[in-house]
Length: 387
Ligand SMILES: *[C@@H]1O[C@H](CO)[C@@H](O)[C@H](O)[C@H]1NC(C)=O
Ligand SMILES: *[C@@H]1O[C@H](CO)[C@@H](O)[C@H](O)[C@H]1NC(C)=O
Image 1 (spheres, rainbow, N blue to C red):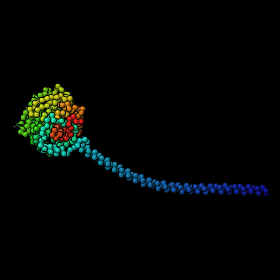
Image 2: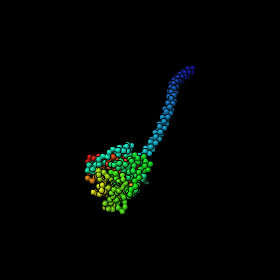
Image 3: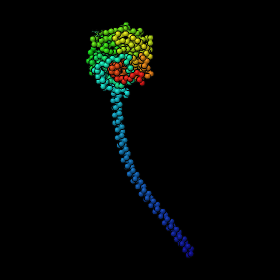
């Protein structure tokens, strides 16, 4: 009996212990459930938040994509516009190429016409003449008429008329009332043809004081002084240089290049003697007599044209594959200007090479012929010995 009691008590005790365990486990379960539901709640909240976030992100991405699309189409529009602009620029370049430092001057011809209408200024003497080139200020393409090579120039001292020598050897030149008349002409049709008694040779002619001074080639080279008003040969002279060679390497047709200013007729030429360089002669424009000669240090090779201003020779160089023309050699008869101190002057990139460059002292303009284009360059001058 005592044993039974003991067993019962033990069982009771075991039952009580078991109950305790169950209670404990239940509490733990409740706690775990609590935490699980908390996690649920939290994860639900996270899920919602995540969903919302996703929605927001979707919205944002959409907006971003739209923005991106808009940007891309903008960029494309800008791209096409830039391309079009570039094409237009290219086109304008080919139509009127000019470097940034030289203006295209629409008013050059007006200036020029005004100069023509002004009373001719008193002719200055070489001794008073101290101009040298400082830079090119502006250019104007006046016309494209005639062949690839030629000369055009104006008689500033008498009539203001413009003369066109089309080609390298012909006997008809054309007279225009002004550069503007030439610009308005269909080809050279508006010009008055002047028939010369002897054909010209090369691109060395000049117009001065109502006369055309030009070179004709027979057994020897002869200079002709032709009165443009009454159409007669006033004087002619054999040019006194032996064994002549073309004066400019890139313009093989020109053997003597004439220019007049300061009451002097200048001739640039070259002979076999000093084959590599260019020589200069000073002549009397009334009698065509040579008064003095110089050998300049300026090479003939790659020279395309030249001119003389106040006793300073400027030789313009290019390359066989035409690039930028530039004054690269200077020679002064009084030694006042050397190539080192003269500014290196670049002409605007043009069509080809200049077959002639004729300086008009009264207008401070160069009449240029470039691949059939008649071009004016307005020059800025300074005084020699001024730096
Ligand atoms: C100008 O000269 C070129 C080359 O000699 C020639 O082909 C052209 O017909 C000439 N033009 C005029 C208008 O005389
Ligand atoms: C033309 O004018 C010049 C002067 O420049 C004169 O010497 C010549 O005799 C004149 N000729 C004719 C044919 O009138």
